[in-house]
Image 1 (cartoon, rainbow, N blue to C red):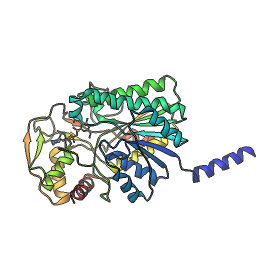
Image 2: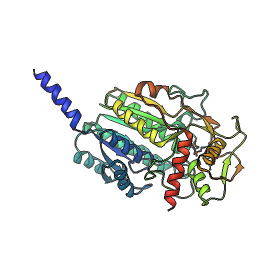
Image 3: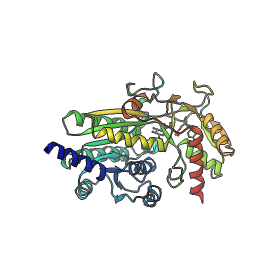
Image 4: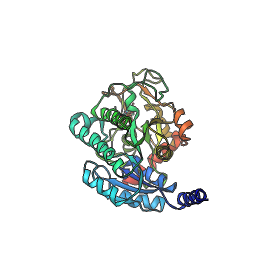
Length: 353
Ligand code: UD1
């Protein structure tokens, strides 16, 4: 009888009480899309972000998209006492999705200590505070960069980790190890590490996307700025790779698909013991010139480009085997390249208005 009652109460709780999820870096590009998908799935979201590479307006736009205003605390994850206070203020946080990090490859080469401090200490602070506040799960933003140039393609989660090409890439590898060692030490923490391939696109409403910030380093922001006329020509870095057209091949994934993968991962993080790793990619590889052509066809614009030498640290080809995420998380990317190009272009045009 008592058991029945408890079960009924649990059922009511599940139905009416939303689980609290803390999203660090929740006003960033992937973070903001993930907040919306969490809200759409019934989670209550608390964002912390230091706004170093985003804007507080993103909180308004999240509310416009989902109809729900997430709690927002402007805070740096290096601030241990500040984090402690956030966990105390929002009691009962079930899990964390940790996006907050510095992510520019070139900058990390120039300022390695900034990258090591920001990216490593932020994670350490969260892991130290989780047991104290009874937070069970963490989802960590890792990257396919940990595979370097994989020996076998498509790349599975079992592929060996290659020596990092940059301090940024190294912080992803070290953070994965920090998580593994912490869980192995017996800390009451379940962890999911998500290795992202190349997120592009934007929210279909054009209210969320990757905010332009200086000269873009990644392909799609540079390409959209070229289409708009801010940049004269796209530089294609290398046409002598061992790929069908000689240009680099990557697994581009729509940011909304990537965001949805986090909702599935959160469900897993609170139930599965230990550490689990998943690739989040589509399984399709496209070259730089494929992307240029697809973008031109999808949006009816012309992208002037010129072939330049290879960029230091770049690899020829990388695309995911996404089977494990499908089988264990029940997640699979839905959007095709045309849609990624359309949504990237709609958002870029919005930003220029
Ligand atoms: C880069 C990072 C990776 C990080 C990811 C985050 C490097 C070496 N890797 O991935 O660690 O996780 O961003 O989004 O920087 N390209 C051009 N012209 C450009 C820009 C890019 O031809 O102006 C080419 C590149 O050579 C590459 C492809 O486009 O073949 C994709 O480049 P990019 O968007 O920078 O992503 P990655 O280098 O794959």
